[in-house]
Length: 253
Image 1: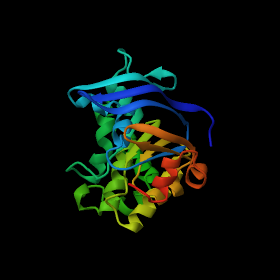
Image 2 (image 1 turned 60 degrees about the horizontal axis):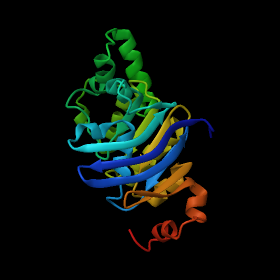
Image 3 (image 1 turned 45 degrees about the vertical axis):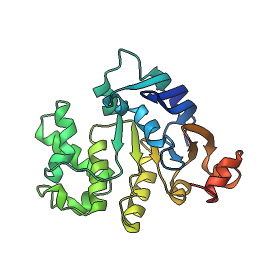
């Protein structure tokens, strides 16, 4: 596990109009680790995730205070190119959302938008991205078929391949397995462990078991506050805050 800090959150407050969704969040996320965010519904986990790639910018009336540093640079500086930022910080959503295009065109979409035209390079990138998402062996003879004909688990891995194709540093995953069956979920979890070698991963999950299985560090959110953050083993076995213990042991949430 790396000790280099990839993302540092300093005194972050986030508002939807007058509603304060996140309050005074401070967190350091290490490079090449998996960080899990847990907590009850509506506690700010997904909002926090979207702060990291400025997806909340797309919602009217939002305000960000504080700093979100990626490799030491504040993502909310006026000179940040948001398109380039989202290339560096990929995102996978709760429900698989492949484009209504072929398997190949789904993966090639991002690189093409960023100017890659060479067919050989695209072929190589599509193959390496699908291999990176542990999907190549299942779809290599189906690249021209519609992505929507794949199973749900395959579609989610295709969305991961699509995120990998633009060569991000960071992968944000918002409950990537919650819509999948246990077998597909296990594949996604196994895949995350492989991807961790090359990417910094932040995952929102409702499954405490999943957080305990896949992550190196865990943050527990409650009512927009980060109650506790640290080594996953410690958070689950010996948390410092009673509220963390109450949530993990199922007393509420």
